[in-house]
Amino acid sequence: MNPLALAVFATIDESAIDALKHAAETCDPHYECGGVVRKVDGGFVASRLITSYRPFGVDLAQLYDRDVVADFHTHICSIHNKPFADFFSTSDALANQGLRTVGYMLSLCDRNIRRYDPSQDDRDDEEVDFRSGRVLYLTCGHIVGWAPPGREEKFADALGPRDDSRSSGWPGGSGSPGP
Image (cartoon, rainbow, N blue to C red; front, top):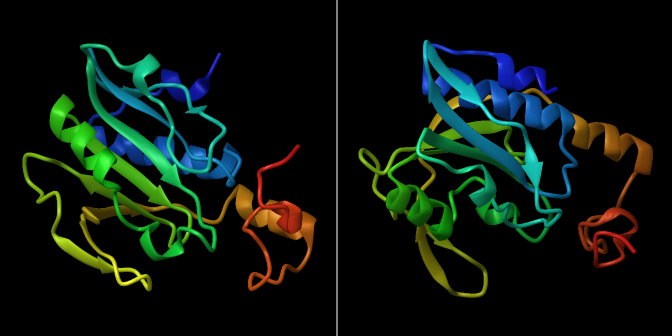
């Protein structure tokens, strides 16, 4: 049984923020993980945490039903995505727009928890200029919380010092998440 799923919160924000703090403590920082927030009698509850075991994208479709009012997920912090880890991806924003749900995201780079509400926030309000010369317009939503350092620091301590200039962002610099 997941004790997180038993906690009933008064607001969507409280439920999602608590769930993302739990994700920071328990999820593997090399993969995105997340869940959904449901409206229940007396408030809001977060689902169990799931992962797709991919560094980018977690498939929350299996958790969605008519009671879902929000979703939440982490963004990993690697050399490959650091310039845009603090932004909701276009697919994040489009999913929330289409499903009429609020999105929450914890960037493991800056530890901020961000909220994107398609009924209040522009989907493409920030210009993100990549070194490739490509310019994208994304949203960073609004900062609504912060998660203290979690599991990634424990992983980093176990792995020892790493030279990010030569590393792929994966343990051991192998270019993939493992065997």
